[in-house]
Image (tube, rainbow, N blue to C red):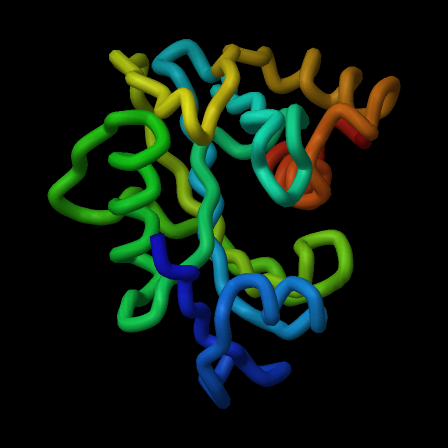
Length: 169
């Protein structure tokens, strides 16, 4: 399988080059990703436990769906593709866009558009990408982020703080 090609972007998220995935990560170049937070009808948050075979954050809890924007794709197209690939959720339009995180060390130098989807499933996680999925009550997730921060990918606390500021975590 050929290596993915990512858009390399500047500090304004403007495309300046295209490079292979491995080079982008090795050199810490700015690039693009999406994170989709899925909420149940009851308000619980669905997170995925990343496959232990993943390059970044293996075996850690992460957004329900997350992925890199591929060459020739925009953020919305990527969100639809990642939901289908990782959770088996087929959408004909992107979920609700919430906010954009700036590229920084915690995001792996990714500009991240964060989306929200309300769904109770069914979900069909791809076993190559996802070891497990689980629902978390927002307050419980906040406590877990405080007690065991190393169990979560770097973007989870950033996104949680923006979506649930009232918890103080």
